[in-house]
Length: 140
Length: 83
View 1: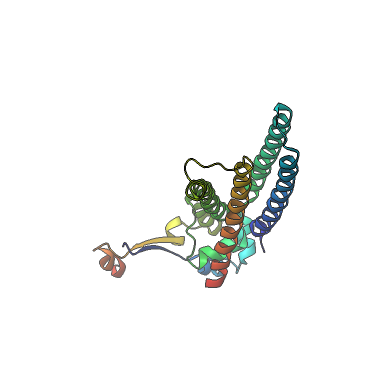
View 2: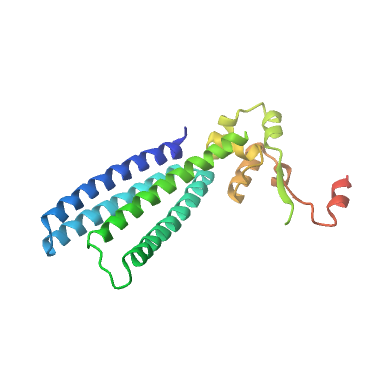
């Protein structure tokens, strides 16, 4: 197993852990019926910190990869972005058609869809990396 | 569909140059051993900078390492048979 394959597994586990944590946090906030700018500031701070950490981590990891691995990672990322867009789009339309255009859905479904999208996208990215390597090794 | 591909002589050149291992070659050009394996088996076509690095490592011109084969080209068979 090379660096990129290890990274795929670690990132999948990391994102699964973070999504589970964020899901639990969301459940607590829903139960408390949390609202107000105080929560919004905390959310933005956590979101920006996680985003910055993820970006810097990705930059440092990219430098360690060779050109072929980078190409595999880029293909996987492009697929993950596509899947994220399709997941969010489909989720929106599923609500539209199941509840009806004039219907109502709980507010927490929006962040839940977003968290679900992040998990599905990361799963796709990791799976795409592992499948590309597996196909190469299978051909050998 | 165009039937074109790049053939390479990396494996042969490795053995011609003191039987250097895939790992040694990978270290010299700054890639992983898996990338060398993929290049040798024709599954991956390297970028121009990597192709030049490989050629320079073997001390030969790039066209001695990689050759472009376009079988749709009507001149292909003629060029192939030329000495």
